[in-house]
Length: 198
Image (cartoon, rainbow, N blue to C red; front, side, top):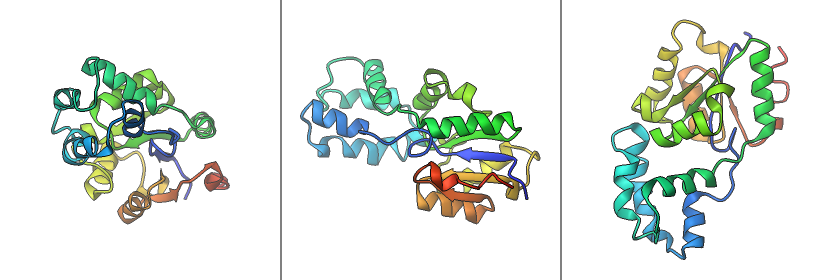
């Protein structure tokens, strides 16, 4: 059946992997990774990413430990600016697909502040037909709840086998396949060769 809707992951697909925020601040401020990892493991990933905690409120107490002399807003700008390089091959594909009538959405694990950064500062609000973010859905990949929430929000516009889900993490791709979507494990643009030739 023809693909009518494509769900794109963010980091590793439409946004290129480079130096992550945690690596950059560790290098530039001479911080041990042990002073950074607990924040992500105990607060950011399990709470901020599903909207159960506010990143700006949670990160305040960590600023001294990270030797950050600015305020929270300046830290978040530094953080998000560190991870904003767009994969232009994927961007061009999205533009082409939408022109041909295929709906394209971002399906991503993000806190609410980076979600809005992606939407507004990086232009994803215009690039995509919509954004499905874990912070607003209240669940994250690879939970089946995430895919179910996305599908429910799409309404009755598409059947599952008309939806293609693209992600660079195998566990997420496997979960999408289990839910019933068509899937592609993405490493580079060549992984999508021929996928839309039906």
